[in-house]
Length: 108
Image (cartoon, rainbow, N blue to C red; front, side, top):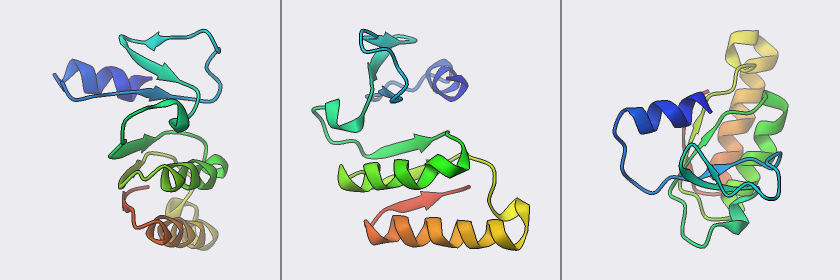
């Protein structure tokens, strides 16, 4: 939510959506932007997704983005290269996964 607030506070005026499967079903907006429980609920093409979930949930989020045609990702999650050899391998796998969908990735 902090990322969303910072984006809006910086004056970003493009289309923005908040997506989190944990949102209550009745939630319509979050901080003034449309809120959805999944990318599939959005009727427009999403160009860029900012992923801010625990590292173990990132692959699922990347797959969801790839299946919905998202072209770019910014991954803010910790738990990758900073964890050493195991984390570096997880990061390489993340990059492979994103590339398999033709997506560009920034981070983690």
